[in-house]
Image (cartoon, rainbow, N blue to C red; front, side):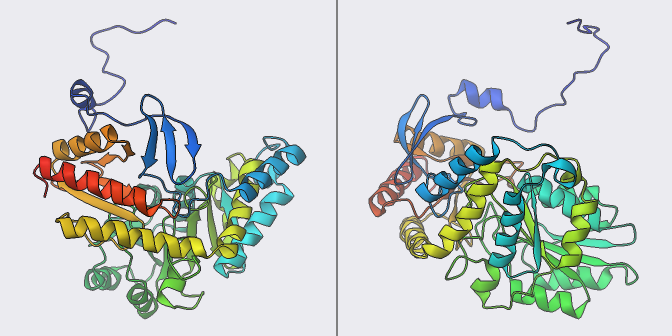
Length: 403
């Protein structure tokens, strides 16, 4: 391969936002570490570390490796193989895809649903293809990057409201172009803070100002609501409270992909206009079958939701009583605030050295001064393992001057 070595040619990559080489030199870089085996009870085997307690997983109900889900995936491979014949709109649709979408619609109590090949592109495609010039999209300040990117890609005016600040949301709605459509977008559970959007008030404001509402339930399915059906169940609200119900198939649901659930008109539009649906390969058969079956398991095993809440309460209470700042977390995501990047990565190393897999999240992902460990509790964890994790974090936090 011939490379251009001219000194006048600018570098291919721009400067990175985080000095990873500095932390590698200090032995404080823990990203991209590979798990070589998933073990029972929320444990994993990690290359170079051996067996560890997994405290960073999105598998909130512990469904990874569930025998019924595994069996469904294996049966799908036997029947359909490992791939599809193309994109869904042409030759790639399987009966499995239709069954998955019907299952999602029943679970979310909507007329129809559409499944995408990734959660990220679900938000990107949905927001960008629905909005036009003259429209306004209003996004919570702490929304996921996929929402932000979808808003930026759309032709609409993109404005934000302060995190969970309903007065500021109302101000943004009042300022929006009255001749265009208005779309409010928010996470149900915020992925870095673990708190919940004030859905009742958001719905009230959307109705008052004739705005549509899209909620991303990536971190709320299987977590919120007595039976794990999500944010509407959590607040006791009717299923038609949200116009566009987005979710992922890669967190509580142990598969890959994303979905939108809504009325027939919305889903038909997305299936014929969303570029990421039209031009992306279909979800593989094993993934579609696993996702479909996981929705069944959530309804068949409600004890998992109860255990998740019990585990969260046990773990978060210990940390708060020790003096850790966990912000307003009330879900499976537990942000353990450390302050500086150095403290966060040092506490992560202390945990890793003591057999706990948990990662530091630092600027620019979170604001300067709010670097943290992002712990995720699961229904798979044993009380004893969570107590051990809390003990290690408290001990490390005291040694590092965090608490």
